[in-house]
Length: 118
Image (tube, rainbow, N blue to C red; front, side, top):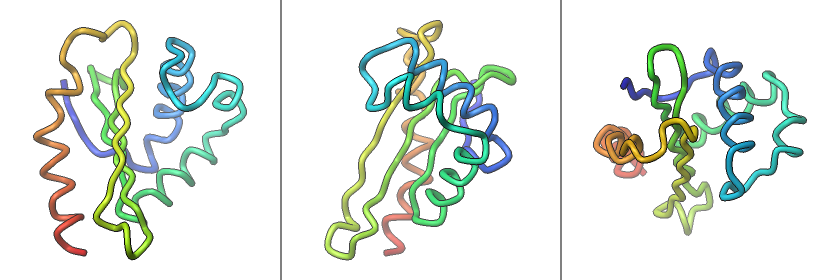
């Protein structure tokens, strides 16, 4: 498994993952109806805007397949910049494999400079 930060060139693959994972569970904030309206350009713009605000998405790759993601959204408001939200999603095929727990050290190494630099 390879873990890395999602970038704009991953937009098509990340959107395909998002559509798949949302269709497999009711436990995510988005519904299949909402996600199916998104385009690759929408996803690319979201990735760009997120990275510009200090937020980011990390994906778990099994070869060329995105099988999981962990999103960190850091508040942009001055009084709440010390707060962040984390969301995790994993394709059903990979459930129970401790996929996201394995990425936490990598994620923390990315997050610490972002938070400490504010």
